[in-house]
Image (cartoon, rainbow, N blue to C red; front, side):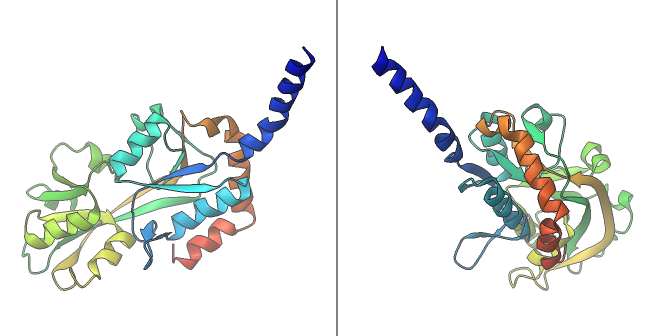
Length: 246
């Protein structure tokens, strides 16, 4: 009996250490320039740095699970990943994602690209209706656009492949976050072949980090939100975003 009690006490004593050793798994889909790979193939960009700083405050080792957006969402649904950043809440996602407070940023400036030399005007929303618009698979944009069944969409695994389709004439236009679009359009592969159209859309939803509802860390949601509030209050998030021109 004494040996059993001693063993139980030993197990209890090790519980905090085991909990503190739990890693934070970051479901990481590329979203330039906010989530990208540097010259050494390592995760970089302001959204990446926000999560790195948060993991540091929580004293949790950070592991990147690199995946296309649909696969990242699947990992979150299954509880194989803990955290995502840069995804919008939708009714479907709310079933398996818990969006954290406070928001770390607000508004999403959406722009459209066409092939250079395309004579078709793209200055008004209705100008989209005769066109096939390239989108990224699994991405939500602006509520009205997302619900508009008149829009013909062509989905690509990511915006890089979307730009390739646009340059090759396989889609007529492309909707993209303004900063991401500018970064991709400036690449030698696309420079001179695509041009930004006058039409823009603004989606002023608040940007929040998402915690998987099936994550073992969901029990620590209050502590995670407290750390995030601290980063907002002391200007850490603002400095990271300002350095990237957000």
